[in-house]
Image (cartoon, rainbow, N blue to C red; front, side, top):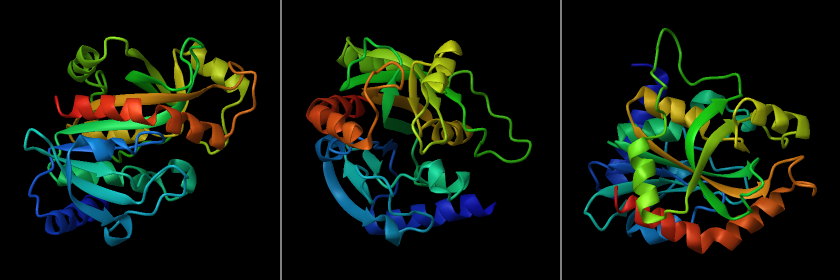
Length: 265
């Protein structure tokens, strides 16, 4: 067993002890604009500070929370809401970025819901629009996998779960997510490059987590909240304040959507 797996196993064991829940079947990574969904999904059984879990760190990004929540769903299943997300640009390494996903798997998760706030290349997607992720392009130049560990990536984001989401909201569109390293926003030329290679959405998270999740067999649903049009698509300068405001404006609607989806999984 390597050190990353051992660290995730140790964190999962503490989650079991503090929550009293043996298995969390579903895990949620709540990005910018999505945090309120944890209040609507079900009954919170335990709220655990990231500081109490090995390998976790308090988030550096405004709009993210520093807790992990154990939530009982209406179905009787349990969900693990991971608010303490680490981004690659924080400089802690790829293992830290995917530690939450590995911990969720060690806690028994079979399904992973990845959310984020992101920039839209498609000008028809106004700020506040939720978009299903159909595939991704990893532009970070990194991977959480080591050695001769060959993982099938032909269907990273579950078609079954995307169809389920569209049963709940038939207006949901879908697109291909491009992960850049950050923390600087993409230049207009980089956005045009992403568009030329098939990208519809640009952001600084999610793809590396999805790779780690697929490596341990998790079924993934990905959702982006379009918080702004990407550089060169929008004529206005980009700012994190804009991202946060778009998240606040859409919070109630997208949280209710996500809660409904999760309780149908």
